[in-house]
Amino acid sequence: MRICYISNSAAPSKNASSLQIAKLCEFISKIGNNVELILPHTGEIKKNYFKYYNIKNRFKIKRLKFFKKFPIGINFYLYSIFAILSSDYNNKDLFITRNFFTSFLLSIFKKKHILEIHDDIEIEGRLVKILVKYLNILNFKYLVKIATTTKSLKKKYISYGTIAKKIEVLHNASSLSTVFKKIKRKNSYKIGYFGSIFKSRGIEMITKLSKIDKKNRYFIFGGSLKDVRQLQNKIRNKNISFSPYIPYSKISNEINKIDICILPYTSKITVSGNVGDISKYTSPLKVFDYMKLGKLIISSNIPVLREVLFHNQNCLLVNKFSEEKEWHKVIKFVTNNFEKYEKIRRNAYKYANKFDLNWRVKKLLAFKKFSN
Image (cartoon, rainbow, N blue to C red; front, side):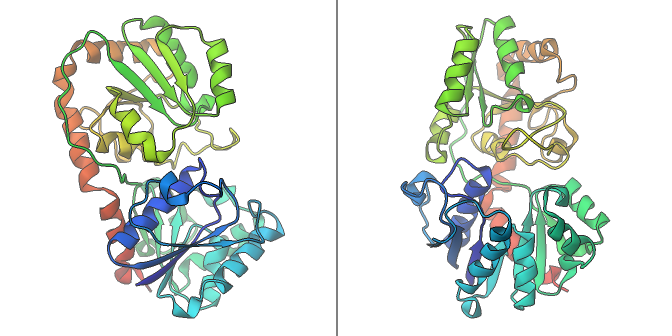
């Protein structure tokens, strides 16, 4: 098929959405489709897009050079219009987007498309809310499938009046790969966190743990160089180290050096700008990367994560996740009995390899039975 993905995200960039879109386009191309990605002229555009995201199956990229900043205000709507007009839309079989207004326009143009939804409508502008809640655009004929990343998100959009059969839950999936390896018992283990360093992601919890758990070493990867220096000046523990954001092309090497990956989320999870709350709907890509690389995962027991994380099956969940003593108790027991957890690591590895990005792409494009 000739497929066009219209994205509003800056790319290449540190944004998770840009990474997910890049890998999705790569894997759609990998299975034999002709893919074009349309982007605004934003992001670290001097860097090689394909090297930045470690893309082996390349596809066409078209940048709209009039949009040199993230499109907001009137430019948000103009961008959607110009993106469609520049797409040679009459020669495309299918469009994919995350943008509700773009979806609305594609229906007006009578173009079949898929809408990927990663968040609640409440973070969108007033016009988009009107289009969804009152004009009922999610039930339009030319929107052939809606893909949500969690079951909770699907339920939310059904509550807005969206036809249930149009929505398929497709959690995020990893494109990484490795051979499963046994880990020998050690005197000290490497415990790592990768991602945003907002307070809601549990950075304070990790620094507290490093103070009371002198036996193991803690590693935090994320944030800018400035952020890292501030943390280094503030946290003087010898068994914790900080590193800035790592491009996805290098992430496998760093995760593979870690023994245990932790997700010490708080009950409220913020996004870029340290605002909002995605705790009801989040589907972190890092969870699937950790599993795909055969890592032991210890995570806060948050309901939405239980859609893919199952205690004592492919991870360990901490119930009292706001208490560092509870985390320390779990980590202490695990590191003293690490061999017992090989089965959990292997289960996670098998799960992520079964539901990998190749699987997700094929499910995403199998849209006929979800059309009106």
